[in-house]
Image: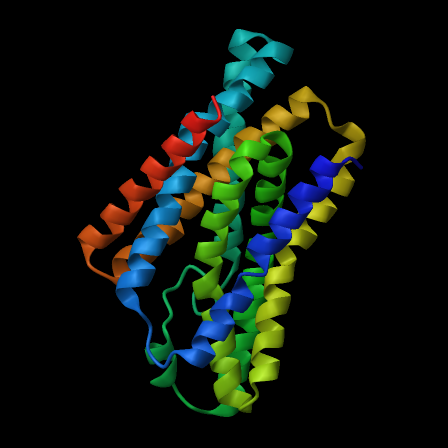
Length: 267
């Protein structure tokens, strides 16, 4: 493996382990900073939507057209794009809503839940499992993006990391309240985040023998679909739920502007 693969895997690892940041925030802060989370999640959505629709989709299309011709390559790109959305939608459908990482959770709401230790422990463990399953395709998406376009890697990793922070809170709070152990709470939160680099590694090992421009194009199209779905299904609803409507939109537009400028700087 060349240094690009190692770099892509390292960035995916950083993005996944940001669930640990959420866990630490849950221990330090007694209350959720809703306005900050609202702007941050909106910002992440803006970054991911812009880079997916403006950059990744068209790079996938260019790669597939060069291999399959204009008509078939264009159809393949669109198919891969919506295929990525379908993959995440199926995963979400299979995860019970109570443990789904897309369900909004805060420190305050967790504190007002039933305080039975067994129930809280079950909630935390199932949330960790759900997030781990959900993070597999996210990890592959982050890894492929970093591998194919290293100049896109940093903003994408930052966006994924921001959206992983509330997931870390969702895992650690119920486990901490059930056990009284910060160590256990952080441990399970940390493990759920490891699913992201694991998904990247397994996906790469499976796909590496057949990797060519066509496979890269299909993967890149799927990555665009995954990121757009995550933004519309998770990040924007969460941003609006945590704060005022306008804050999420300001964050969204700011993310798009930052992403646009970062791409222009690499021209």
